[in-house]
Length: 114
Image (cartoon, rainbow, N blue to C red; front, side, top):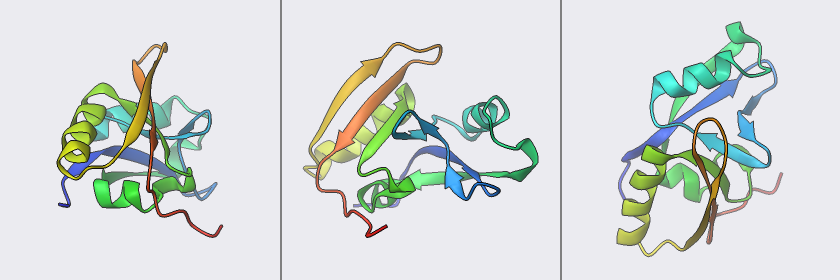
């Protein structure tokens, strides 16, 4: 696998967690999209960071979401391309929201003990 960036996520340093959509860790297409999400969330605007997300992080249970991710379309397209090359299995379904999201359950994620 490569360290190719799949998307971007917002980290709320006050709450010490990544932004979620329901029970899925949110992965935006671009840093700007992740920033817009954070500005419009319940997070404290002054206490967030935008972090790139790679396939390695996703497979290592990025965001402690047990392999559940809410991806914007471009991030999902990047994820799909890398997943197919690396035989990573997943289930995806579209979510009807203001920003089209794909909810992805990734198989084989290394779950944390937390």
